[in-house]
Image (cartoon, rainbow, N blue to C red):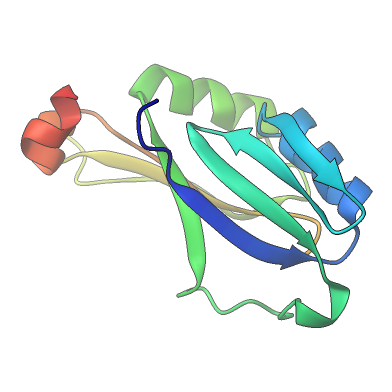
Length: 133
């Protein structure tokens, strides 16, 4: 087994969160109990802890996680989410025309956890050899 990045955080309503991570982000649910659920999302294990009291609302922007997608997948994701209520910062592109051009948007799950979805037009220019792994 290769290493899998793991992130755990509290959610307000477990079923609502499971539905979001499956339907909106394409995740798959593994282990699940009344205490929480493990979602496999964008190659990471995201543990949704059923802990309404632990939810920070509003979540500061500096506390977010995200995924970097291939450019075409990011564009498809942006089209699919469109102007949904989950979008808190609409898609933007920066450094247009430069080797480090990027696109990004910020969405929020039902518990207020911020998720940044981004892409690089030329991943190697930004990530170097990491982009080729």
